[in-house]
Image (tube, rainbow, N blue to C red; front, side, top):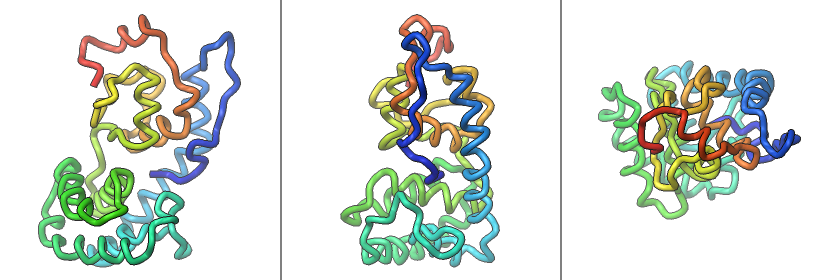
Length: 203
């Protein structure tokens, strides 16, 4: 969700392998606070109607649009807002992020030009207002490349924290989503290292 530095950060490599602890330290220092602030911004909205509006239009503090949705025509965002307002009574009673994500997806994906990143970001913003955040890492767009670099299958839709390298398990799932996107070109684990993550399927 955090728009800070998406895809722009490159790390120096040591002997051809990035240090995952180093990446985790950079995220704590440079990105974690910003991601938490964005979640708080949506959580403190006065009512669901307002939360849906700023989520649908991707409005950040100060009134500007978040970078992820900056290129989407306002007319499409307006259609999404109207559609989401129509399912507000259902959203209000959801207490599971997967259910929120699924409802947002079925509501806005038929609108041309709104893809999986918009669905996730909007669901996360609505979930923040409702006090329901993801319990798993959602894989989409740039996140998919980062997940693949860690050895996860291309078709993975979500990843459990326990499946991740130890260095990343200290973060909330929505923060890991940021890490996998921001550092997608720096992440890599050898095949034998991936196997030690656990006895679970890598998806």
